[in-house]
Length: 333
Image 1: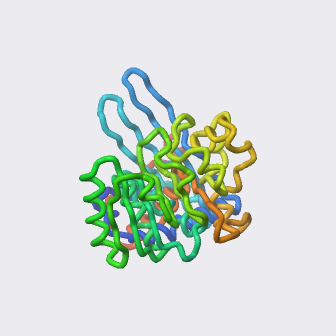
Image 2 (image 1 turned 90 degrees about the vertical axis):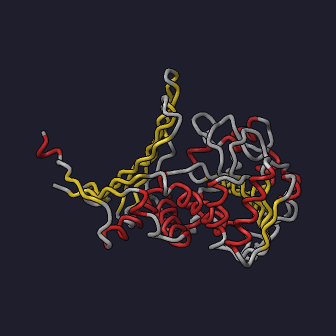
Image 3 (image 1 turned 45 degrees about the horizontal axis):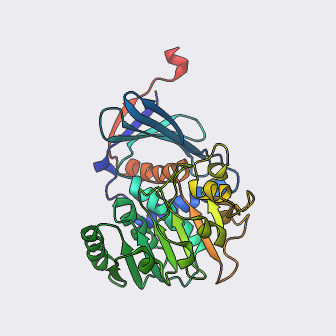
């Protein structure tokens, strides 16, 4: 019987740095850019009790791993719970079962950093972040591993939150001056990189405020009826989603792109390429220093399976977690 390694949050804590996550996730996107299969999220909703169940998948043959990231939220619990079963991509045998919550900011931050590395100018040094929660923190920490940041400006609607964020990262980044500002415009002005990591359903900054040559990572929304960036931003930018299917006008959840098309800001063919295609070099990324680029990150199984594959190998080497036996169908049936 296959032995499955069960890994909790404590088991994977400290196993990898943000740079390690970024390397693993970049490799995952490269594989998908060269044809490895991945699907956007699928969600089922319940009205009574209110809640939703979400899953998304990827197979990364060269990593040797495949899996499904699954989480449930609501249903009376007023919380969310994440599980990640990981399988061997060659044999199909189960390898591990992760408590997926603790790795979420790391792998999501890594996906944003891969987008920055693929699309932002090499000399990008000024970062604006809108949002001050755990995902915003992860985005900034991961981005700092792919660009040498001189200045970071943070805006969130709550003064105490943005001040706390600025104080924390002014200490963490050391080489960058981090400050809180009192408006999105003040954050975005002259920024080389703009990251939005919010729960907002309407645009959080004016696309006309973007500097020439800026890169934007929008990662806080995955609904066709919600967006963090406006049609002006989408129209000004070379638009790159994590997966093309997310930008499908009928079934997708990339609200920024879908609404920009609906309001006539862009045509339906404005989508440039998937991130994996840019990472793999099958499609070009940035082609000039004045070009505006936009990575629309809604979350995929790519970064999740890539990160889990890396963590599994390290946990196995250190014999972390517990193991359980799983009966194969040939024996159970």
